[in-house]
Image 1 (cartoon, rainbow over the protein chains, first blue to last red):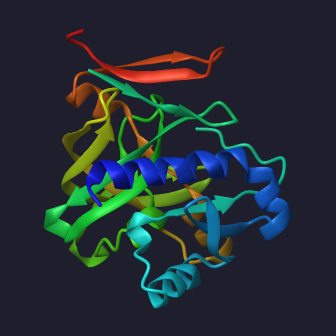
Image 2 (cartoon, chains in turn green, yellow; image 1 turned 90 degrees about the horizontal axis):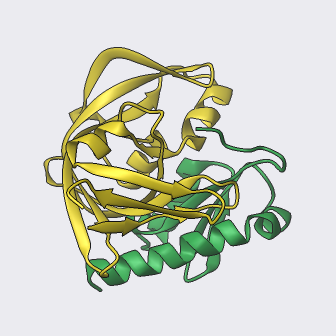
Length: 79
Length: 150
């Protein structure tokens, strides 16, 4: 896969995550990390390092996959 | 050159970036960065640095302490990082920038949680060094970067 294909796949997952944050919070719980690939959660854990290890164990490169933190309901990130 | 950006449901502007940093053995990575014109510097979060497998022992810690949300962070220099963004012609355009990785300075678990939940940021230095300006229309949730020559 070339850079553009990787980028487009990652962007699709990122948009999907943002559109489905509330339902993902209901399904996987708040204050949780989720790894997303092809618009589905392939792993989740409250501990980031454990999640990274789990992905590596599945031979999935954490550098190339969307890993997002599900904030508590009502928490808004302010930059 | 126009680089379209995404706007999330909270109205924050972000984009997916390809990260390459040969000096630190980061061959290829993809992460989302928020665009924050209130930040003077671009930085990679500790969480993303871990996912990219950045070797922290190879980074030089700066003396400055960054205070974000009541928590202190140490900035670590990361030289010549290649940032790849997608333009409106479906091409990946690369920009090279000296950047920083922020790492929590405390080992308390609550502060570690905060440190790991921080996003990576594209700051003003990225826009200035690469001669880009930001267009943002919050009413239409439309946002993009544009070369200043245009």
